[in-house]
Image (tube, rainbow, N blue to C red; front, side):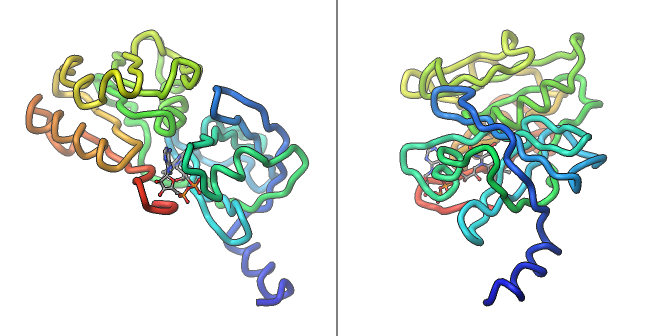
Length: 229
Ligand SMILES: Cc1cc2nc3c(=O)[nH]c(=O)nc-3n(C[C@H](O)[C@H](O)[C@H](O)COP(=O)(O)OP(=O)(O)OC[C@H]3O[C@@H](n4cnc5c(N)ncnc54)[C@H](O)[C@@H]3O)c2cc1C
């Protein structure tokens, strides 16, 4: 399709943003800031995500790490070993580049009214957790398990000392949750690799007696599948 036809269509569906920050935040993640006046003044809920056109028309989804109501979203993009257009974009995008993205959306979000909050996931999930944890007050009841490849892959999360940090290979998220044994009655947020999300949900519901409606899940990626959403 010629650009004269395509661009107006894309402009209806996507916002044009400029990358104004691109720097490492963990050993394999880059912290990106994308600014656009069309991103100003939105109602963004902690945990929501944006769709980004990372290579031509290829979309990939990233959680909003921080939202700036003056018109910016901040993302953290993992450079995972299998690579793909999303990982390549995150690794190589530079300050000053233009990018098309949709406004923040999604329902994998903080339930502020919960009596306690349990976070379970790996590196990619910890980006959404970061936004949710930022929104929780000091007195909130917080626990969870976050698995990373190495300690250098841990994002700087607020309340991080209340989470159990696991290293991949030494431990697993389902076992970490069994050990943690969070009491039912709160809300559990479970995200990341699709099969692990299902296993953790089963532990919470079948073994620990959680109501399935209190376990909010979101598969972020799956081995062998491209761009889950
Ligand atoms: C709601 C939502 C929020 C997300 N938030 C984030 C985020 O904040 N940060 C982030 O980095 N990603 C996030 N993701 C995942 C992201 O959308 C892409 O799936 C990811 O960047 C991989 O895209 P890719 O093009 O590099 O690989 P793809 O072309 O999508 O996949 C190629 C292959 O790489 C492997 N692969 C993909 N992801 C991983 C991984 N994490 N670890 C190991 N192997 C992998 C799989 O085997 C896959 O078949 C989110 C996804 C969703 C649905």
